[in-house]
Image (tube, rainbow, N blue to C red; front, side, top):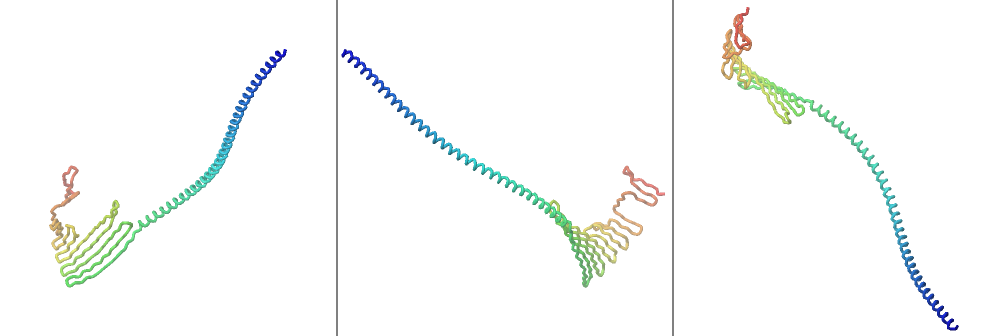
Length: 274
């Protein structure tokens, strides 16, 4: 009986030992699980701390962005106001420029009108002279007048003069006219000169009439009228006779009661004047 009791006690102790070992193992496992849980909790805490830090940084960034947006909106409003002011200033400047252009156009028109009036104004200066010159062999009298006209870029001068020269054998009359003027052609100023001089000479042999630099002159002599061309007598008229080297009759020639006329065919025919 005692042995049986001892065996039971031994079996019970063994069971208790096994239970203690199992409990120890369970406790070890629980401790490890507790360590794992703690590590997980620590990790979760770190993650939570990091998340909180990130959240704080995000909030700070959001606040900065909000402030920047507000500043940008303020700057945009200021820029819009400045643009409105600039547009108003530009409109005013444009209106002033238009007014100034109108004033300039009016001034230019007035200047053009004044210039046109000045161009149409002509100024004339008249000069008259006379003199008598007496020499032992002749007496000469002269009267002259000069008219100088200026208009715009053109000018003209008209000179008139008469001269009488008396000597022992003749009277000589001379009438001169000299015209000088300038013309503007294609922007170039050109000087033009025209001179006309008529001579009348009275001698005991008759009267000679002609012009300077003209080959034709007329001589009225006691024997008739002579037409001189280049120093050669071209026609002569005396009493009821005439002598002409060359005659050109354009329409008709009447001789006595007859008239000679050209016909349409280029011929000549005579007609009796009844």
